Image (cartoon, rainbow, N blue to C red; front, side, top):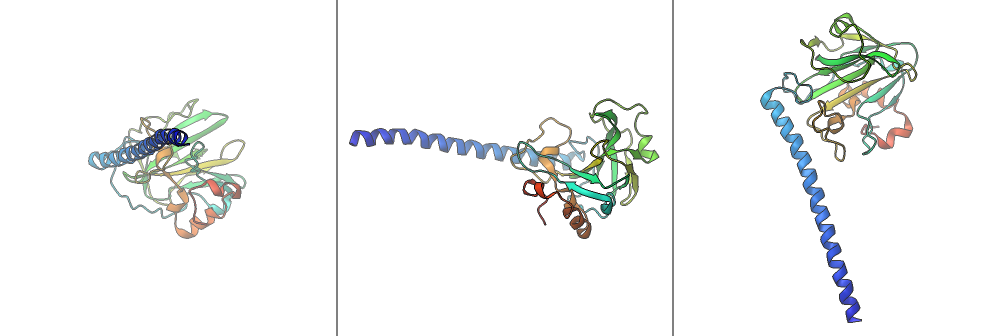
Length: 251
């Protein structure tokens, strides 16, 4: 009996050591990721250049959007941002009820880059806007941009979705200013809206090391940036089956 207990004890001790080591490793990795995010943010403020967008910026961490980015009553349903590790969605999909919808700048911002593309059966524009060093947003699948956006891109669309280097000159837009119209993607008739915050770090998601945008690491629920009444209107349109997985949680 004593020999058996001794053997059990000698088995348990190594297991405990392994468990402790795993816990320490996980803690170190999380602290490293958090430190990396903090370092990137500190470098952004010091250099006054957004590390993902690669353009000069002004720090303003407490940004609030003042306008809708489209007309919410023309949106049939919303497929929200998804926070689930292994299958995240860093931007919301807006399903258009019918026809085309206008697209607006939700806050004073500048168009800094994007792409005019003919890819996967869609001829449209992906547009990326900077608000501050900490905050930026995208609106993808704009089919009819205003002329000053259209003229900033090549006349011939590229055949992939890779984002080009920053525009030679950023284009400023005021909150509520028309960016264009969209019918969305050819089959689903939806378009994308995503917001990213360098102060936010999504635990358990990739850090996008080496990529231009920290989309997976830094995306937030885009509707939380909108005025309260508009925000609630979008929340009400979130598809119920996706509610358990989204970071848009203020129902």
